[in-house]
Amino acid sequence: MKIEAIELLRVEIPLVSPFRTSYGVDTVRDALLVRVVGSDAEGWGECVADREPLYSAEWVDGAAEVITRFLLPRVFADNHVCDVASVSAKLADVEGHPMAKGAVEMAILDAELRTTGVSFAEHLGATKGAVACGVSIGIQDDLDRLLTSVAGYLDAGYMRVKLKIEPGRDIESVRTVRTTFGDDLMLQVDANAAYSRADTAILRQLDEFNLSLIEQPLAPDDLLGHALLAKQIATPICLDESITSARGAADAIALGACSIVNIKAGRVGGYLEAVRVHDACASVGVPVWCGGMLETGLGRAANVALAALPNFLLPGDTSASARYFTEDLTEPFVLDNGHLRVPTGPGLGVAPLTDRLAKFTTSRTRIF
Ligand code: NPQ
Ligand code: MG
Image (cartoon, rainbow, N blue to C red; front, side, top):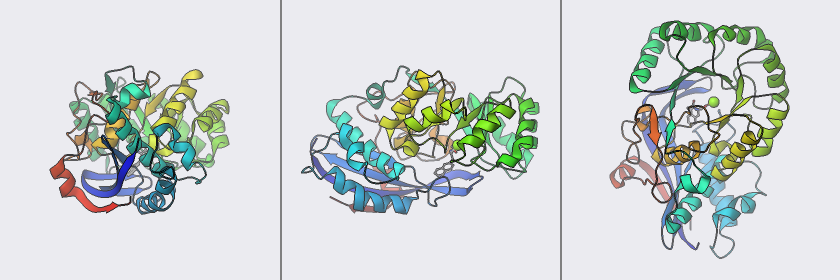
């Protein structure tokens, strides 16, 4: 494909309510978009880096800088001709920055697929027409608010609930939700690396609540700690922040550090590597599920396509647009009986709505 132009856009979309994790609070989604204009179609990429480097080392201003100065010149070195299969190799000498790389690859993939009339789902190897959805609930100020929040999402049809936890806001929250909503509720927790190896006794107290999993209790680089913890608690350990590649996923599983894997394309450098993580886990019988990073409808469309692959055996954080935004950038993703339909149109199958893009864009820069 011949690339005619490239633009970086920043959009700021208000969240319906503040989202609090052990890393901090977000009240808006400040997303970086990559728009690739090919000769026959344009493509959109979304960078999931947050404003501050708390979830990972990347942050949105840094990602824009890396994309502009280091990634795009490499991608377009061959006279602006590029095919998506070669993107990750062209970017490989740049160390790190998976979210920035993933956004560039996503935009080129979208442009290519729109050109050839193939959907993300078909290209990635999806086998389902709709995906089961869960919801991630941020840390709440008090237990009443937590219960109200869970009740609202269950009314909306979500098939499982994930509670964010941190030391001091863990056992009682989980106990209250489990007691209130009963044993049939599919319930899991996400610690976002807020615990240490010294917290094993607290984490063991979660055993009595029949959680589907505990996500990322310890530091991202502490694979041994997770393996030791797995032997001492009954709740299955799922890794998120620790998993940055297909090889890393295979290693973590081989070490006994996790028995379930959260896949986020941005964290592993793009949707193509995300498929390789899925395949690596499938080959050793480890189930995966699709994480979420407060994506706009663009990233959401790609996530839903990814989550339609066969080894995505648990409901993902692929929530409806309304979970995060009153107005999404695209036509909204709407929950239907706890599921989101997988887009079938070319590429992402959705595009930014012109008026929404105009309303939410805070900067727009042509790079090439
Ligand atoms: C997780 N996501 O699974 C992440 C954490 C997270 C849905 O729980 C901006 C960008 C805000 C990325 C907030 C969910 C974010 C973000 C939370 C990621 O750990
Ligand atoms: Mg997580």
